[in-house]
Image 1 (cartoon, rainbow, N blue to C red):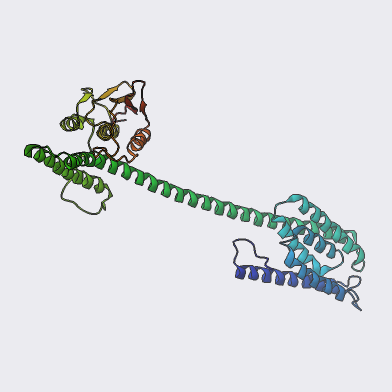
Image 2 (image 1 turned 90 degrees about the vertical axis):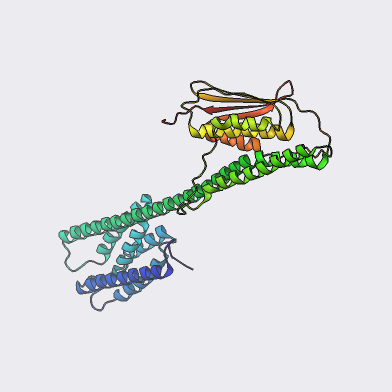
Length: 399
C-alpha cells in the first residue's frame, strides 16, 4: 500500500510523513504535559486518564497515515478523539489541514464545527481547578483561531497544488502541441519536396520515355530522325538532372558555401519558352497569356507555371499529339487558368507509347493552388475534352 501523491517521489513522501507524525507527536505530548501541569480533572494525581489519553493519541497518529485516502472520515474521527484526549488535538489539526487542501468546503465546515464542539466537551469533562468565565472564553477564542489557522494553511497548500497541477497540464499540452507542429512541418516539407520533384522530373522524364519508347517499335526511322530523337532524349535527361540539382539545393546545409548560385525558379514569364519547346515534340499548344503580369507575386506565378507544366505533361501521357489550349487571365483579385485537352483517340492495350500514370500530378497541382489560397478543379466536359480550371489569388509583391 502506498500513500504517495501523484508526481511525488516515494522518498520525499516518506520524509513528509515522518516529520508530520513527529510534529503531531511532539505537539500532542506538549498539550498532554500542559494538562498534567494544570492538574486538570483526570490528569492530576493519581493520573487516571493520562494513560488513556496517551493511548488515544497513539491511535490518532496511526490513523493519521490514512488521511489522504479517507480525508473526511479520518478528520471526523480524530476530531471526535480530541473531545476526550488532549494528545489527539495535534493529529486532528493536521487532518483538518489535509482535508482543506481538497478545497471541498462542506466537509471542512462540518469538521470545523466538530472541532469547536470537541473543545467545549473537553473543557466540560476535564476542567482545570477553579475555572472562571475568562478561562472558558480564552479556550473558545484559542480554539477558533487554531481552526482558522489550519483552514488557512490547508487552503494555501491546496491552491499551490492546484496551480502546480495546472502548470503541469499546460506544459504537457504545450509539449503535445509542439510535437504536433513539428510533425505537421515535417509532413508539409515532405509534401512540398514531393511536389517539386514530381513537377521537375515528370515533364522531362515523360518526354524521354516517349521518345525512347518510340525508338523501340519504330524501325522505319531515318538516321536524321534517329539523331534528332537521341538528341531530345539526351538534352531532356541533362535538363532533368540539372533541375533535380536545383530542387535538392533547398535541402543543402545553409552553412555550406557554394560558388555556384542557385538558378531562379520558373514563373509565368518562362511559360512561352516551355510551350515552344513542347510544341516541337508533343503537338500544337494554344497559349493565351496576358502581356502585363506586373503585381503578380513570385509565389503565385511559380505555382501557376507548375500547374500549366503539369497540364502539358498530362497531355503527353494521355493525349500525345492532340491540341491543347492554355488560357490565362486575371481580374482585380484572382488569376484564372483554363487548360483544355482535346478528346484523345483510343490506344491499343500494351501500346509502348502509353506512359505510366503516377496519379500524383493533379493532386500536387491541387495542393499548390490550395496552399496559396486558391482552388483547382478538373474533369471532362460534355464534349469529352479534359478541362482543368484553377483560380489563384492575385497578390502583389509589396502586399
